[in-house]
Image (cartoon, rainbow, N blue to C red; front, side):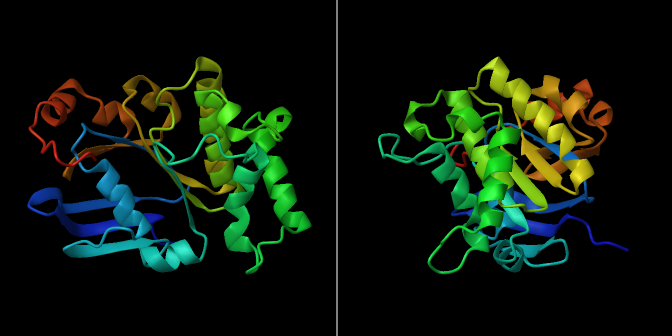
Length: 246
């Protein structure tokens, strides 16, 4: 039997005195699109960092396709699209340069692109409808175009698991439609997606599963099951620590 794509077991994380994750259990099958739902402070960002191996839990175990987070990251099994990029938008960096960063794990120490790297970048630009903007400076793009550029960087990694933190936040309708249509094609190509979103209206059409988080998993299952009013009320009326932006 194939291992779960993402398997987090009995995991607790504190940030100082703040409890961010509380004996959390979640299991996401391969080739699934799972929507991650919860209020600010519910632990979503902490969960992403735990899966990536950037946060060390107080207790529990995380496995990515059977590997530890650190081993999975080194093996190129994970790609991450953060909610916001810490970028100097005035720096003379072109869009295709940004996307090529997604290939660094496939290159040697000198990071000289090979034909396969250039092909992966070209394909990622095409899939995110950015081919015509490939040579434009990254800071000259609109907010939606920038989001697509960093999604293209994640796609260029060819990682089987994608973690997307609020990919629809602050973007235009064209970019939203482009990203949504693209994400729907990825499971058939072997990818597993965990998508944090505040837009509940997109979840039923985009996601196979939804996961409602409030430091623990309150519900996981089909969007129809998780988006029931009584569960949403339980999640969105529960007090969460404001110090944790997750």
